[in-house]
Amino acid sequence: MKIAVLYGGTSGEREVSLSTGKGIIKALKNKGHEVVDIDFSPDKLQEVLNLQVDLVFLGLHGKFGEDGKIQGLLDMLGIPYVGSGVLASALAMDKAKSKQIFSLNGIETAKSRTYRVEGLETYEDILEDVSSSFSIPFVIKPNQEGSTLGLTIVKERDQIKQAIETAAQSDSVILVEDYVKGLEVTVPVIGKQGEEQALPVIEIIPKNEYYDFDSKYKPGGSEHIVPARLDNELTERLKREAVLAHQLLGCEVYSRVDFIVNEEQEPIILEVNTLPGMTPTSLFPDSALEMGWSYDDLIQKFVELTEVE
Image 1: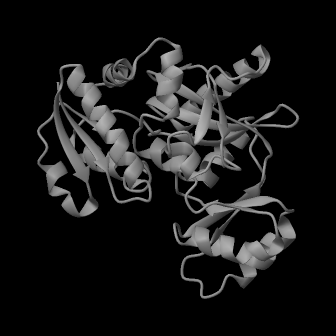
Image 2: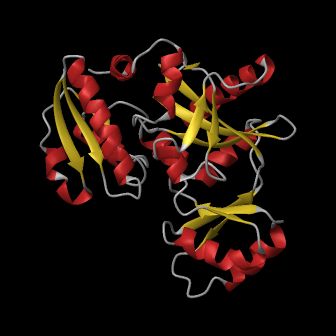
C-alpha cells in the first residue's frame, strides 16, 4: 500500500512524535509499503490536502494530533487512517470528560475537579477552592495534554499557585485530582470494534519519583516488567476494564490504558491514550513482544485492522 505517515507536529510531545514517526516509517518500509513521510504542522495543511495515498498512519501525539482535529480533516478528505476517529480521540484527550464516562460505567477514578483558567488575571479564587477541596498530596495538571507535561504533585500548600500557573501554560482548563499512591501499570488494547483484546499488562517502575516525561522517554528512565507481577484476578480485572474503557470512548484499532493500582489493590484508571508512543522505549511494543510480535509485525497488524475502502 501507499501509506503517508504524519509525525512531528507542534505539541509539547514533538520530540517523542519524531521518534515514533521514524519507527513507524521504518517498519512500514520493512513490510514492503511505499511510504510518504510528512512532518506535520497546522500551517502546512496543503501537504495533507494534496495527499494521494491509500492510508494515513498517525504518529502524532498531543494537540493537533491526538485530539480529533487531524482526524476530522482526514474524514472530510475521505482518506482512511489508522486509529480512533474524531469523537473518541477528543474524549480521550479531555481527561475530565473521559473520567466522567468511566465513573458512570463502574471504572474507578480519582476524585477530581476542573477549573477554567483562560483569560483570568489572577488565580486566587481557584487557589482558595483547591485548598479547601483537596488534601495534600494532590495533582494539578492540564486537562488536555500528554506525557505528564505541565503536571505537578503538590505536597506543600505553597506549591499550589506555581502548579496552577504551570498547568495553565499548556491548557485553558486545568484538572486537580487526588494523588493515588500505588503501582503504575498500563494495558495495551488492540482489535476491531467489538473484538478487542488486551495484551499483557505492563508494570512500570520509574527511576524518578513518578512516571514523568524523562521516565517515559529517556533510555533507562524506567523499567517495564511484562507481564506485571500481579495475581490472576487483578490482571484479568485490569484487562477487562482496559477493553471496556477503550470501547466506552469508541476507540478503534488500538489504544493504551493507564492505571494506578492503589494500596488496597484496586485499579484506578488514569487515562486512555488513543495514539500511544511507538518509540524504541515505548510500552505498547514491549507488551506486543511478550505475545511474540515484533515491532514491525505490530505496525503491520494496525494497518490490517484498519478499514480501507
